Image 1 (cartoon, one colour):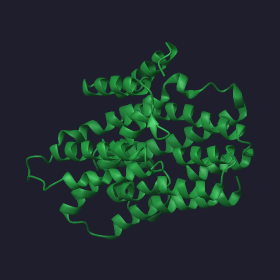
Image 2 (cartoon, chains in turn purple, blue):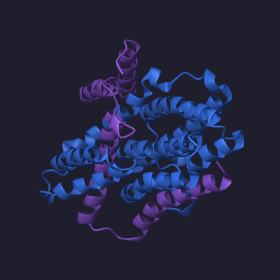
Image 3 (cartoon, chains in turn purple, yellow):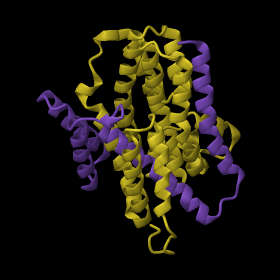
Image 4 (cartoon, one colour):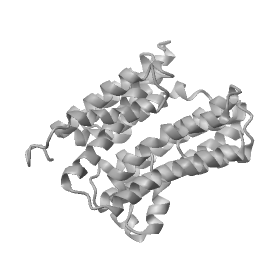
Length: 102
Length: 228
C-alpha cells in the first residue's frame, strides 16, 4: 500500500461522485430523462441489494445472510420501524450462524 | 447548516444513527483487516477518510494482504465506484445548489445516503436526510476503522453479528416506497436478475452497473397512473 495508491483511488472516487452531481446541475433535464435517471438509481440500488444479499466473492453467500435479509424485507413490508428492520435482519443472520448455518 | 437542523425530522435522525452504528462495525472490521495486512496506521486512516467507499477499500487491502498488484486493485476499486456517476445524476438536485455544498456533499455520496434521501422524496426533507445520513456514516465509518485498527485481532468477525445482512435489508427497506410504481418494480426485478446472472463471471462492481440494463424494460410511463 502506497500513498500513490490511496490518492489515486481517493481522488478518482471523489471525481466519480462529483461528476454526476455537477452534470445534473448543468443540464436542464426533460421529465422523460429525469424518469430514466430516477429509475436508473433504483436499478443500481436493487442490483446492490440482490448481489449483497445473495453473493460473496462471485459465489453463493450461504443461507444465513439471505434469510436475514428476507426477515428484514418482510418486516419492512409490514411497516415495522426501520431500526427494528435492521436489527431483525442482523439478529436472524447472527442467530442462524450461531447454530452453524453458513 | 441551520436550515438543515430545522428541516431534519427526528425519526430520520434516529434511522440514520441506526445505519451509522451498523457501519461502525463494518469499519472496525476494515481497520482490523488493514492492520493484519500491514497497512501503516496513517495510510489506513487516509484510505478510509479520502476514499470513504467501503467495498473498494476492502478490495484494495485484501489485494495488498495477498501480495497482489496494488494498482490493478485501485483500477478495480474505481470500476466498483463507477456507479456513483449515475447516482449523482439522479440525486444531484438533492445534494445542494451552491458550489461548497456540491463539493462537500459529493464526498458523502454512498449507496446508503442515496437510498436514505430518495426514500424521503426530493425536497428539503430529502436534502436534510442526505446530509445527516452522509455525515453520520462518514464519522462512524472512520471512527470504527480507527477503533478496529487499534483493537486489531481482538475485533470479532462482523459476520457473527450479521451486519452483512443488515445493509441489504436496510437498502431494501429504503427502496420499498419507490416500489409502489409498476415501472420501478419491473426495472428493479430486471436489474436484480441481470446483476445476479453476471456475478459469477465479472469482477465485483460490474454486475451492479450492468443492472442499468433493467432500464430496457422501463417502457413509457403511463401518464399519471403509475407516477406515485
